[in-house]
Amino acid sequence: MMPGPLSNKHQAPKLFSIRSMFVPLHNRNFSLLFGGQLISNIGDALYYVALPWFMLSNGGGAQALGIVLGVFGVARIGGTLLGGALSDKLQPRRVMFVTDIMRMVLMAFLSFLMFQRHPMLWSLCLVSALLGFFGGLFLPASMSMVPSLLDGDELQAGNSLMNSATQLASAAGLGMAGIVVA
Image 1 (tube, rainbow, N blue to C red):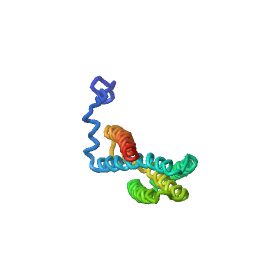
Image 2: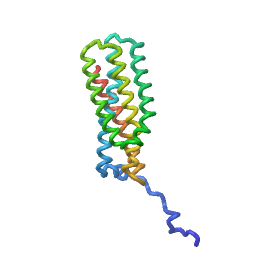
Image 3: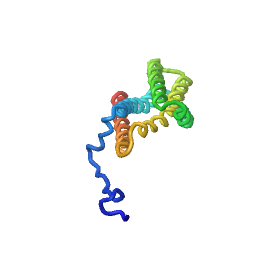
Image 4: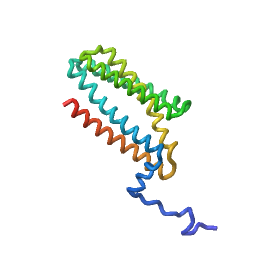
């Protein structure tokens, strides 16, 4: 039998609507992930401004800043490489939870170091390396969460919301950091 105009093979594509974009937020687990990621990304953006500002305004110089940021980047790459395997072995939710808690503790410790006025370069490198490493472990786990919570049309909308939240949180965090350091 040949497919006719009303068969399933020739269904019209679903139209995009603003309302359909927010449907994933009705999923409790997705909403918790969304809110947590929003807050976490604001904190990340604050770090990206606060650390360079602190180092340069306290006489750290461009070379010291380059070392600290380089250590962060290399550690983040290493964490990302291990993060995929770790997320496969353990539950991604657990990996995300533990790594975000570790990053929160490290940020608090970094704040403490900043109040010391002239912390040693090695201490800033250590904290940056650990922040980069745990951030790298976090990434693969976070990317696997949305497909485990949503499917079908909700998955596309959920991915769109997560990416929008990341961009919004980055802009908000950078703006907040600018106000703080001004």
